[in-house]
Image 1 (cartoon, rainbow, N blue to C red):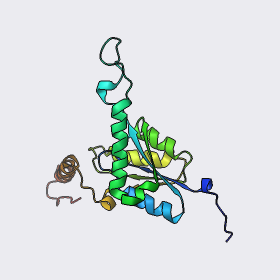
Image 2 (cartoon, rainbow, N blue to C red; image 1 turned 90 degrees about the vertical axis):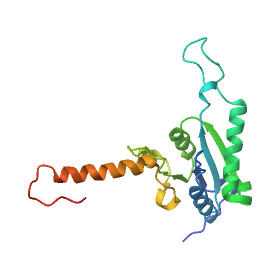
Image 3 (cartoon, rainbow, N blue to C red; image 1 turned 180 degrees about the horizontal axis):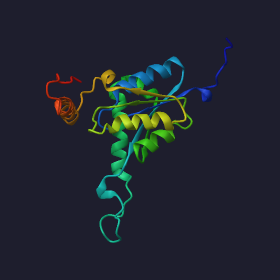
Image 4 (tube, rainbow, N blue to C red; image 1 turned 180 degrees about the vertical axis):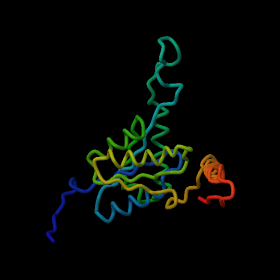
Length: 190
């Protein structure tokens, strides 16, 4: 095996998506450990959209014309730094934080364009359609680098009440369909 000396600017870049709701503690911790092992740089990224009140109005003369930024952006940026410090403690000083305006998929894919790895949580804040699962899958197929997805069972995140309710309803529907129109046959258990 050949050993290659890497210059500081040639260090591997690990990008971690940091959720504004959960703070993505498992993804941050995992990404930090990996970046440390490969002597890489850790970049914590969060997508940001301006509050609706500061977004441009669809019709001229209706509502504020500010495009966001300013105090809202600074507050969101401070929250990102705070979330990283809360998880990593003193190690956070070595993490580059980036708050980027845009949707989370585009922001993460753009950040991962020149990265060596992208790390994200697949939180169960989910809806019945499993939007976060679909989101993670789309990242995996669209990213220009390997993607590590922390599943809810690893992160310890609890499913939302909506996911719990839909799971119970789904089981009852499958059980009912299995029994319907089958006189004399035992019920089908999923």
